[in-house]
Length: 293
Image 1 (cartoon, rainbow, N blue to C red):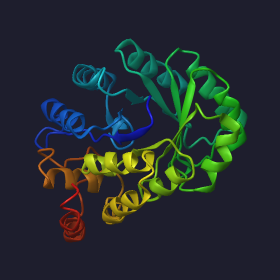
Image 2 (cartoon, rainbow, N blue to C red; image 1 turned 120 degrees about the vertical axis):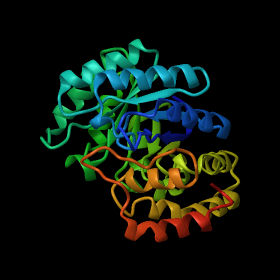
Image 3 (cartoon, one colour; image 1 turned 90 degrees about the vertical axis):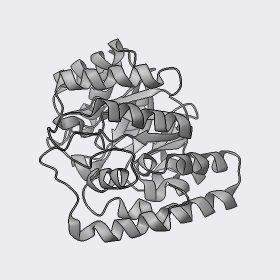
Image 4 (spheres, rainbow, N blue to C red; image 1 turned 180 degrees about the vertical axis):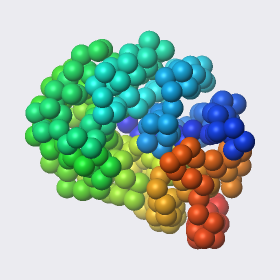
């Protein structure tokens, strides 16, 4: 995995059949290669992975490897509530040649902290580098800094996606994990400030429709052109907000279809298409950002 801009990729589906649009997936991947996206995060929350079979996951990962392997590292969402499924999905990703696993803390059951550490260490023992995914708003459990640090002592636990939105955490975690441990923001609205405070990059929903702009943002920070970074972020801020008018990835898929990046905004159930009452609000945001998307 590299520092920089990582897209949390949507998965395109056919509106007629609900099947994965594999050609559309290839087109999305090529869009990100052309935009210079640093890393690919596939089969995560934004990719609706929880609605997919193992056979579908295999096909998606094979296409990702064919299209971007060697161009950008492939981070695969393999986390779920059942450790046996986490193991199977992680081994699948490793066997297919992917580069790292994004492992969310087990949700709903609210494991104690010692169990979160053990879960990450056990997954890392499989041999694929692990990026911890801490998103308490979705899981109901918050992986605390000192326990993330314990897990990070495993050589294969290489990073953290922090979707808490708590900007103090990057400064609190960094001294505990060292400079080589990758800290990614998982909250687009606070990503720039996260970078200012010592983060290495972000795993972004907005990058689905503004890939080049998100790459420009992280490049400006890396080159210490903070005025440029602020200007880019001001233009993107409305998108960071409006892409969450409904649950992710519903608005993002609608925006991607509106921009011609995918053929369909279809989301698998229990999600649904974007509420028509909100179309105008998101379309206005797209128009305001038309020079960066």
